[in-house]
Image 1 (cartoon, helix red, strand yellow):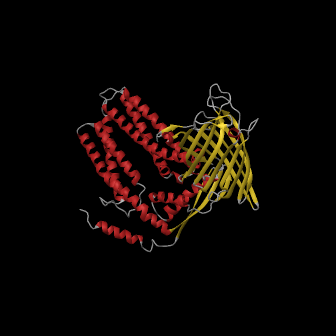
Image 2 (image 1 turned 60 degrees about the vertical axis):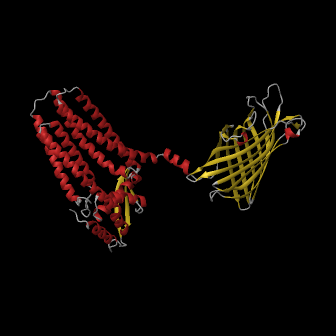
Image 3 (image 1 turned 90 degrees about the vertical axis):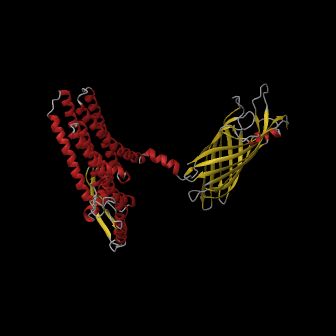
Amino acid sequence: MPNRNSAPVFAIALLLFCVSPSFAQNGVLEASGYGTGANQGVALEAAKIDAVNALVMRNMKRDVVYRDLFLSEAFRNDWFGKPSYVQQGKGKWTATVPIAVDEGIADALYVGRYSTTVGALLDQADAALTDLEAMLAQGGLEESNGVLGASETSYRQAEAKANEILRYLGPVGDATFFSSQGHRKAPELKVLIDALLKSALDGIARIRESQDKLAMNQSARNVLDLIESVEAELAQTDLVADSVYPVSSAPRSYATELLRASSERVSLAREALRRRYTLVEEKTRDLPAEMSYPRERAEMVIVRMTSLDGRLKASGASISSEIFSRSALARTARWSVSHDAREYLNVGFYLPVGVAPSQGSTSGTDLPFQADAKAEAAFAFSSGGLWCRTSAAFGDEQLTGDANSVATQEAALGFYGKAVFGLGFRWDWLRRTEGDEPVDSRTAVSFTIGAAGQDLGGRRALPVWTSTVYWELPGEGDIIIPRDINLALETVIRPSKWIRIEADAGSRARERNAAGLEDSLDWIGNLGLGVGLRVPVLEPVMLRVRWDGERRAAISGDEISGGAVSLNTFRFGLEYSF
């Protein structure tokens, strides 16, 4: 029965080790590594891995588990010095790179992550011993009862289990730590598992010898020969799975060329497994029912291939994911959602649905779709500067009645200093009524004033606010006030890079699609207030919320007639900034 005081004693010993003088040393561990490759990047990658091996395995005398943990930390924290390169011929480079790490950091890794990892591996191996012994006992019982096929299956399962344990326990070379339940150290566990593995292999050999003495037709013999060859090939595939596992467990620590080579090895190994799997199934499909032993052997090797394919699939997925994350497409995708929103170009839209409280309901209501794009820049010099802006918009212009569908553009240029002054021009590329009837295009001149001061967090200069007055130029003939005095005011305020406030008001006349009337106009007055909020985790994206109020009435002669219609709505949209 284990001593109940062993846990406190171990904890105290570990604490004393952590604060011992050797742990507190301020020495520096150093080594150098060498590597060759087709280019400087591949050679440097090999040199870094060699430097870690030299420092950990030769200088520090640690095991492979510690080496793998140290390797990821070395790449993550860049403990490598300045590399040197020598070109030895076309397509061949040699790299040399030093590595240096504080001894206290190396000791902290040993008593921290390494001790935790090794303890978990020892506990896992200790717990698996019970299952392994049960499989061997079951195989022995079935062998004594003459059920050879089932017996070999049990022995094979024990063999696979023992190899699995040795696979993750094998790299542990430190005899300091022991399992928490059986209090067994790594060397002791390896000896026990090796002995159990030998028992399983001896049982398999006895059954094979017994089966060879039995009469068997040629088809069954062919199946067994095939399985023998497949099992021999699976041993090589196991080596492939073992070799790519360190790469798949820490793919960020390896160069892209090595990742691609490992991914190719995984793909080839899995393809070979699929071919063997299909071949074994085809050969055993037509075996007589009484040939139970070849069938059980085939099922056993199929289970082994399935398990091995699962290991390769997991490693391949990890490596492929890292390769994709380094691809141009992935870099572009990451940039698209995380780059600084410097507002060189803003592209946005409002959804064609919203909320209309004026209709006595807070439920959704249909609204016209609107999209816009805007580019603005300010160039500040020592004695003044230049400001320019261009924008385009597409969609229905009004909320009420028959709307004009327009595609319009604006360009403005001005002075940028402590204040902003600019002149601009706006014109229509397209203007149609709701009935898809073309109407006269509208042109407008604009005058902008504002104040400098918004630098978007030091990234580039923009006005902190601007106000722009638009006047649509009258058409031919006498000026009629309701028809030709079309004015609008738009104000934009940028209190910070995360918030934008917009307000506008206007009075204008627009054609409507009224049957039987060649020249029918409506007066439209509007007010609007919008707020844009950037999402901190998706800085290029701005959420847009806007209130619009609109009033429409018919124009009769030079007067605005009665029967006005009003509507106010809340609209929602998104904007993306480059």
